[in-house]
Length: 310
Ligand code: FAD
Image (cartoon, rainbow, N blue to C red):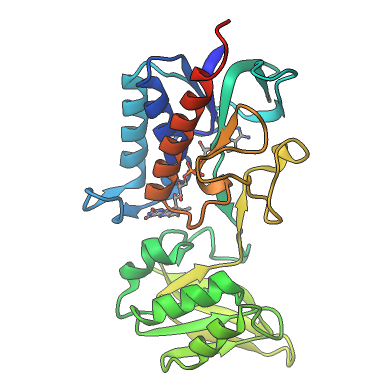
């Protein structure tokens, strides 16, 4: 069996693999798609010490570093079930979609998350060409331009406030008849001079020309009227979904489906740790996921050295 088996090969899983492998123990990474969300990222400008890189380059560098330490990478492998140890310190099992069962003395879960899509025409076509999901990542690319934020929950309203300080104008589009964000955020948003808010508004299309976004169409759900706003960017903020469906009933999850961890990356299951966007860690970013992966690996190692010799 592996000493540490990591499920998920994004920044969190890769960092966990490097930290664990440097302890001289047997480490494996099983990932549906090594690199994770970074593969879908165009420019990365906020990974500390790296002025600018792009997603595929960053993902290739993650893989090269993990391979350098002799880690067993099982790419294109999806985990479907986690079986906790039947006795304290016993092996944890991970059942894969291909039918194989991997055994490990400890497991780190780092399956990441995915942004919920609005699923309107133009969203997929203009992804990374004006359609964005992360204001911390892509906000500065729209400096001096006009953008929309879809979603009036806390993340949408926070994004709109954040973006209003960078871009020329923000249009916030909320499907329901009122913003669902905390009152203090809504008050702040309404005080900003360069923000327009449309509630009861259903986004129907993200329009574009010459390969980039040039507007957003929405329907006023009260009057049925169609409207079109000219702008250069659209931030979709209707939720980040953790890839944890397969862990329901085995590992404690928050009401958002995030794996509940403590400051050291422990889950509620003995010998099982977690890191990155799939967890309750605040703020979902590459540098944070990498830090959390390192934490989980060091915790797993602490756990292993406390086990009786077998
Ligand atoms: P992920 O990157 O999501 O990796 C999860 C891994 O788990 C993948 O290998 C996946 O295939 C695998 N996996 C999932 N389910 C299973 C399963 N059941 N079995 C096996 N493997 C599984 N952050 C920044 O800091 N800066 C940026 O500029 C930036 N830009 C972004 C742009 C876009 C378009 C997106 C989508 C995100 C961006 N982010 C950015 C966020 C950043 O990518 C994430 O915070 C980071 O990738 C999280 O790392 P992770 O390892 O926790 O998860």
